[in-house]
Amino acid sequence: MTPTLETRMAPHLDGESCYRAVKSRDRRFDGVFYTAVRTTGIYCRPSCPARTPAFHNVTFHPSAASAQAAGYRACKRCLPDATPGSPDWDVAATAAGRAMRLIADGVVDRDGVEGLACRVGYTSRHLGRILTAELGAGPLALARARRAQTARVLIETTDLTYADVAFAAGFSSVRQFNETVREVYASSPTELRGRRGGQPATGTLVMRLAVRTPYAGKALLDFLALRAVPGVETAGEGWYARTLALPHGSGTVRLEIPDEPAAQQTAFVTASFALDDLRDISAASERVRRLLDADCDPVAVGDAFAGDPVIGPLVRQWPGLRVPGHVDGHEVAVRAVLGQQVSVAGARTVAARLTALHGRPIAHPVEGLTHLFPDAATLASLDPEELPMPRARGRALIALCAALASGEIALDRGPDRDDVRRALLALPGIGPWTADYIALRALGHPDVFLPTDIGIRDALVRFGRDPATAAQLAESWSPWRSYAQLYLWQSSTLTAIPKEH
Picture 1 (cartoon, one colour):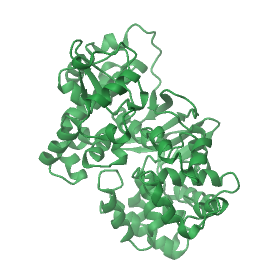
Picture 2 (tube, rainbow, N blue to C red; picture 1 turned 45 degrees about the vertical axis):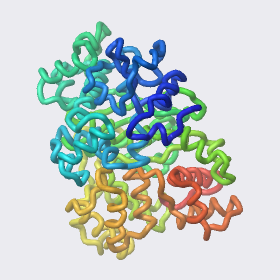
Picture 3 (cartoon, helix red, strand yellow; picture 1 turned 90 degrees about the vertical axis):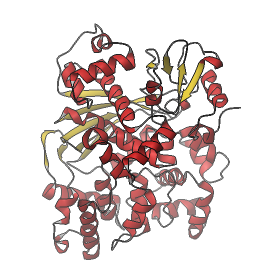
Picture 4 (cartoon, rainbow, N blue to C red; picture 1 turned 60 degrees about the horizontal axis):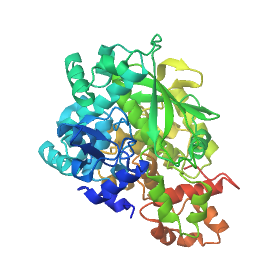
């Protein structure tokens, strides 16, 4: 029997179920757990093409850091660290999952373990206990594993000097970088790079970001392109690009997004980063992964809707549809308020005006990308009476930005989602639609639904359902209501463009 989603998500992995996944080389489990082989001293992803080891010779670990802490090195054949993350980080959104998102964003490297614990809302000691219990390693070990992965990618795909790679990956010294790479990969940085021909470094870093398949990349790209704000975002056939506000500076990214609706193996999004400061590469790649919803388990989502008379046919038409995330929670919150009760084009026009007036120009503009979206502190200082929108919405926007700028509300996936929703609803002019839309895109919540959304209501009418019963109907779609939302929005594109989302 194939392991269920619940089995795959259990903090304490079931050995029999994991071994069945390894024997079947099921790529859906890559990043969910890791297989360590006692006889070779290496750890692999479940889909490793090497011969399946005997059951009595393997142990299973919930994270690469856990396997490394147990003394195993990464397999050079399957590169187990180059996998999508566990979908449980967004599905369950436990303290461990929220902490993993922040670790991937580089919070430990920038603010230390105390800073991470503060963002999640626990003491550092208690957070360490939680992470060790659920992921088999503490925050420092998890951050170290993430740095090692970033370093390997930079070593193998760029011509940066080893010193530049070390600091870009988040290491505090070249010596620490060398020791970690040797320990994790049983190779020196020079051996990892090998004898490949070098091209002069151009200042642009190109990375391949793994996503689970099936992957409806074209639908995601269409969603982003329709809402692209001039100066901040641009898109074309098969690609999307935007500016990035990062901890140490600004940058841009261009994504080549594949459309793999029927693929049976891992797909890759090619991301070309141009950054002011190489230390931001981890944060930049993690935020782009959020945008792409790269860690979703599309097979589990599809299976949940298989027998549903409304969503089931849509899943079969668009397998692998993703919930578009965002690279900046503050930006998506502002744009959610701008989109209240207006069309997509109208919201985009207002956002473009605010960007031109109050956005910060980037140091190295490229075609179509000139500004960062205005930050919350800048918008909070504006007079709501002078904003190009109704006064009530202007006051709501200023109140939201003031709460974001002060830290009263954080949209970095660290705090508990329910706490964030309550804080948003306490602000004037922020209703359930806006709060839930922010949860959908900024917090990566897989189980929110917007029953009053005009696009949803129109879609339900076309399916012969009463829009007044939308909330009750959506109960049967839990815990994947966000994906049901996207499928209904996608169906709306066949006949009409819905209001701004």
